[in-house]
Image 1 (cartoon, rainbow, N blue to C red):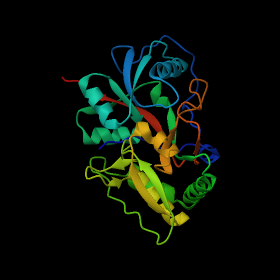
Image 2 (image 1 turned 180 degrees about the horizontal axis):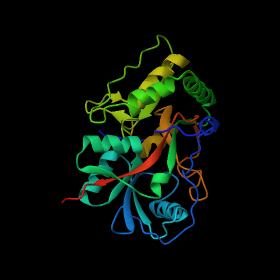
Image 3 (image 1 turned 45 degrees about the vertical axis):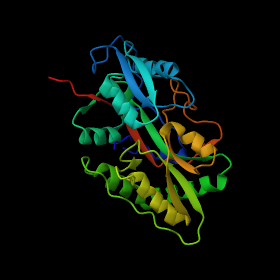
Image 4 (image 1 turned 120 degrees about the vertical axis):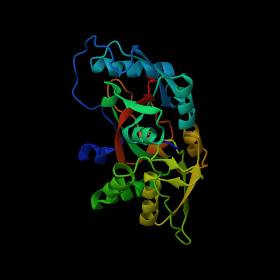
Length: 291
């Protein structure tokens, strides 16, 4: 499959909650064209955002580009509910590029020789944080997740998993399957996985979950003394699956927070977010030029 989401930023930010930020200093806006595509209009595939539409998202991205001195850059986002559809979109010419994360971009390129990572002077300066989403009334579950994540940050387990499953993973090979041990007689938490953020949220061709998030869940299961059952859901349906109680937890991404990007752009009502456990910079992938 494929991969979306790796540098951990300031520790203070990671421990204060799920709020992203843009990297680099503000620059005066100038009429500088984007240098990664010949045209200044970029048809960009993105995972579906739940609290905005494609037109508004385009305006937000244009504002980000202008902030970094790229007045001429215009973004035309197209939302997709899963990574497979996005890859078909770029191969058919429906979009020119995919917006994803560094670790996912590296995974995609390593597993598909048609793709390449390209610079985008605005989007490459943005970073997202990764958290768990739970229902707002599941305060006890959120507290358990926060405690486990905090412990793993403190004792080095989280850094170990990042190195093993992201930083040092062989990008051209699928990460190993991860077994989540059963806790006899314990309650079960259903966690939604999409497979759309390899090697983070990854489902192997045989249907087995693998990668960083699965290893993370196996460790959390041991620390909170509860069973974890993985349930595959579509990216676009993950909020509905959570609120309808098909699942109890789902992986979530917190978009950069700033004047250009509203804090609630992808946080539906009725959801609460755990403390973040990972952060990665935004990357752009396109098809290689035929020469």
